[in-house]
Length: 207
Ligand code: SF4
Image 1 (tube, protein in one colour):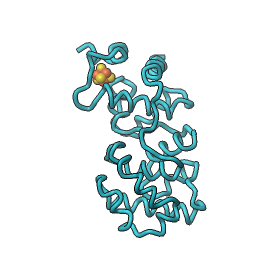
Image 2 (cartoon, helix red, strand yellow):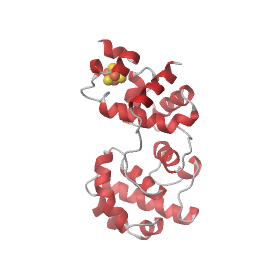
Image 3 (cartoon, rainbow, N blue to C red):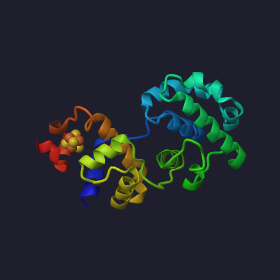
Image 4 (cartoon, rainbow, N blue to C red):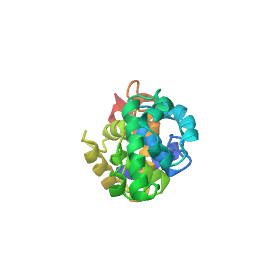
């Protein structure tokens, strides 16, 4: 019940909550999400227009050497490893999936650089499939502070959130928690005393 009230309050506050990575098709979202690990969406969005103008299909990425991908993403952390992941993931897309991004968790997890979080982002946003909840640093922090989980392990946090919220809302839920985490419940300088949702649902607001 409390979880539903938090969801309703967040939906009202952030009616436009959405994935903040820029993409126009599932392949672009997959690649942008791989690139976003330990990087900001803003930083990824700065790099991807030129990257996606150069490499348009999974085959384009698969046929390139990772070294040819690197210059386009050099402004993003861990870019050498990420170039290898993008290349390897696209090789698998070409070899096993006809160059298309698959629509199941098990298939997505066969791609290099793809763990549950990335797979959930792609399934939820590109295909509208609620297979799980995206748990990133913002979701972790806000879920813990709202008392929605006591865990630190992302898989356990995801399970807690899946148990508390209706499946149809799982993708949206992660966007709402991320929006609140970026705007109010920040890692440093959380605006605890100034926020009406916080005052209703988080004990920190009364400190
Ligand atoms: S009161 Fe503070 S810690 Fe609690 S959810 Fe709001 S911003 Fe985060």
